[in-house]
Length: 364
Image (tube, rainbow, N blue to C red):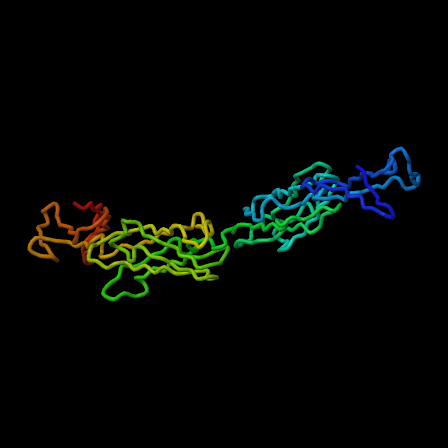
């Protein structure tokens, strides 16, 4: 490279192009040195140089993020409460020169998580690193909860990228909409078959309780087993629990009929609750089925009476008849074998030896 200074010219400009590229670089230094000077008209005539000013150093400052740009690989993350320790990845793009410390801060309820790493250190040449976060698993019913982890400081002239905030959402947990079941006193109830007028004895009240979370409006279906369709009403229905409501009552009526019946017991089932969020509610173990018993009614075992020929109340016999036979009748078609106790009654002048007995009555 040569520069021509005109006659009477006191200074000239040396132009050195600096190439602007996209490559991350640290400081770079190069030198400009005066080598010689001579007359343009006669190159054999040398012109002296100042020995103290023949060299100039030029420094190109660090450029294109030589220490790197730091940011999260994602801006949203959803985890379950039992996730435990999770990794949050931070990437370094651009330059990989030098050791860089990345500092974090959090925004949110600290009862839900612990930031294990408040900072991480990228070694020279390292492009990816993870910070660890511990999700606290408790037994409290909770809806979705979110908090933010933010990159707020980077050392050694590193820069922070646009994706510098990560929102972590802990999914709803511990049945926030509640757990449903029959109350202990409702697991087995009795209801009388209705007569001409329905009263409180003819209505079974079964209390359904809501434990745990009480968030949201929840619908709980119920159903009586098919076998009870003719004896109980209604046979199915829906219970609607408003937000924060903890109990509802199912009212079941025993249907009146004219048929003699012994004790009848039917099951009533709670079915899967309908929740506004997936897995937000459940049934309580061993408390989702109750039993409803209708006691025996319409005289199911019948009425017993003595019957003698020609008379319903008396019979005359000779003393030497030997054996007297009377008919024991049972009214109404009925259930079960019945034992009937009998005794003979006499006036004061008669002996009563061997006059008591028992009949084992089997219906035919």
